[in-house]
Image (cartoon, rainbow, N blue to C red; front, side, top):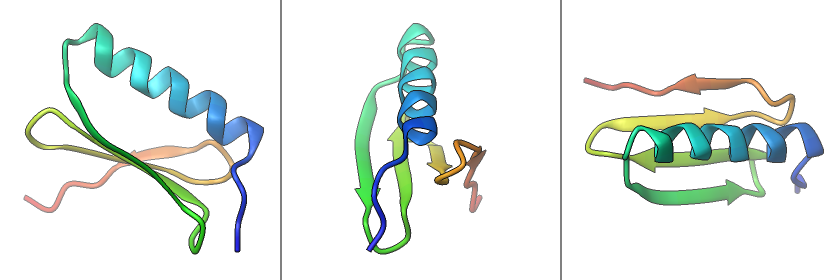
Amino acid sequence: MYFLTARQALKAVKVCQSLSTLYRDITLFRFDPLTGDIYILAGENIEISINQDGRWEFSNDT
């Protein structure tokens, strides 16, 4: 089981603030204790994951 890190939490706030500034609805914000990752779904097709080091990436399956 993983726990949220400070770097990860700060990056999540920054990413959510950026999405909000761009008027994107955040439809899902989830911390997965099994992987230690944060998942954010926003707008119609924005998928972002943030790992425990605070690095984020787009997850685009289209």
